[in-house]
Length: 195
Image (cartoon, rainbow, N blue to C red):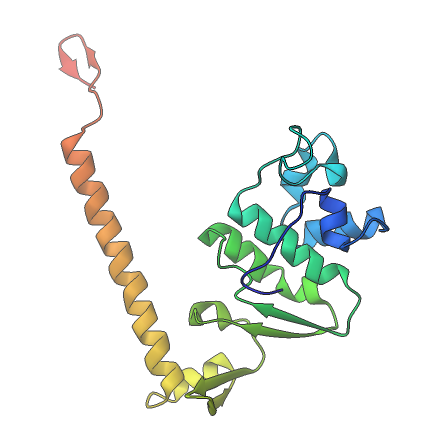
């Protein structure tokens, strides 16, 4: 599954199986493994739901994250011995991304998975991480081993990204506090006292 992928104005099942012939149970199973199960349950036509409105106004315009989960299910549906995932969670929110990573081992099963990412926090679950720099292998190892090498590129990049998330979280908390100060919640009065 590539970072840039296409879904077609056909049924969800046809998009997952990339064809009109498919095993409905396998399609549903792959969608559940990809984190699309709850959404699938709410669709009246299930795996027969049309993606987009190109052929029929009853089709559904899925969010970017939902579309990405359908694309992940497509990668899982193919019965190949390995899976190549290039930034597979780029369009997912942090909660959905965590759910995908938590279920990653179950998703790929005994297949070999090659996972490409620039977001190093999402590489923590990988058994073997290969760090490239200028087209060459710069480091290789587990997350723990690469983090233990404090002079290594992986450690430097990971810490730089972690600092961004920490600073972003702090900035978000400050922004929310300022917003709360501008728009305080209404106070309820009871017998002349604030409650």
